[in-house]
Amino acid sequence: MRLTIGQLAHGAGVNLQTVRYYERRGLMPPPSRTLAGYRQYSPDALARLRFIKRAQDLGFSLEEIQGLLELRIDRPSSAACARVRSATEAKVAMVERKIRELQRIKRSLDRLIASCRARKPTGDCPILEAIESKAQEGGADG
Image (cartoon, rainbow, N blue to C red; front, top):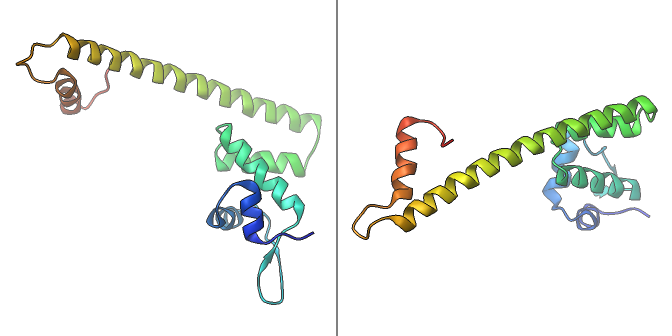
């Protein structure tokens, strides 16, 4: 059974432009075409597209996904599995760094909210003042 680009996109939950973009990037192999020039995809293309979207949902970049696809298709082996595990461990470390950064931002925002609640009715907004002072300094709140 062959799929049109619309069927493929719908089956993977993406839009048509995404499929075309992935083709240009080399993430999706070029499809066969009808005599009229319409793209025709195999069910394997749908599985590949779903793999790409799932990897993106897990935080992998398109470059990283390209590497995962190459390992998945070209060299299935225990060495390939070790490389995928290593890439995944690196991704977990990056996610943990992002979580710490988001927690730091949350603490800063909580402090700003607390200072806003404590302000006097005639005072300026402490949140806006804090953002402006950091913007003038060119730094981030720590």
